Image (cartoon, rainbow, N blue to C red; front, top):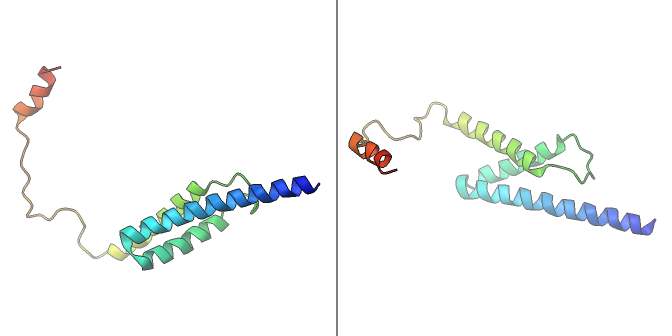
Length: 112
């Protein structure tokens, strides 16, 4: 019985390590891209999403990547709401775009 409890604890510890690694990678990426405040909010969203999972808390089959995806969707929604009323991040209308000459496109087909 003691061996079974030890195995359960080690599996749980391994699962906690995977969870912590996934959360850490997500928060670090958000911090790098959007700053510390968004990283803090993203971490809260990630933890909220992890609580919404259908599996039991000590489960060994939790899909942490699904939690990250759901938290990313929350982040995207929050950032989109913040951008409403602001111009899009795409290129401005005064940007010049050079057309690709049609002869260049056909040349690659002929070489094949």
